[in-house]
Length: 272
Ligand code: ZN
Image (cartoon, rainbow, N blue to C red; front, side):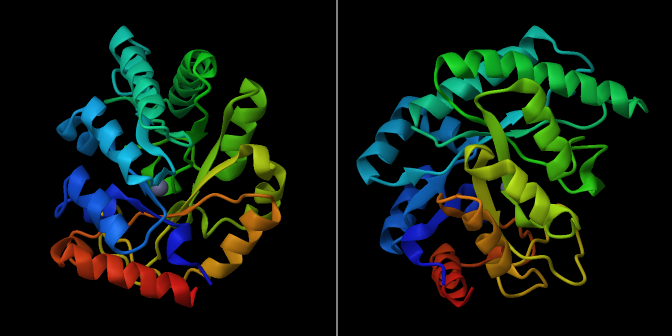
């Protein structure tokens, strides 16, 4: 059973309904133990103000979403690197457990996937150099392969862990059930990651059919992911972090009363 205090609300789940202050209040009202803001919500509140609100709430910050997009300009430009350093600073400001990286897909007009992956490896290395000085762990989020072109060209947990091996200390993975549930190698890769590299665990469900590959994620229990078995795998590897609920749902959960969404999250998690 997943208890409410072990849950964290990723603000994407209520992105259409709540600003950061409302999301913090909602977490407290429903007994959640943590929050994981997206940077748009943090910027809208103001980083200093957002950091203060979160600190006063006592909520754990399971992550800041997100840095990355290293390939957006076709090369590692100063703008891309600066933005990633700012993301590290913001993660430090709010006391996040990690900075989640969505690394970017193919540059506009490119067909060269190996080149995109090389940009990503270099971008991670450069950002990690900075993050290490500030003790902020970097978490690579491997994305489902259907996003390789437009969001992230790191697509399996094995590929993300190979990058971690290459880059050394201070970097690990954020595992999101939406992206990893299908992977026949996942059990072995979670064992390989171990406590040191398992930095975040994101929950939702995979609906059948999925009608939109970005914004039709399911609430836990509405799809086909055996959530408890994956939670057991990460715990067996030593992960003791929060269960961060991240549901992009344009036609369903984003249209509902956000207090009902949180009630349902708590109820469904307890059934896991
Ligand atoms: Zn995620």
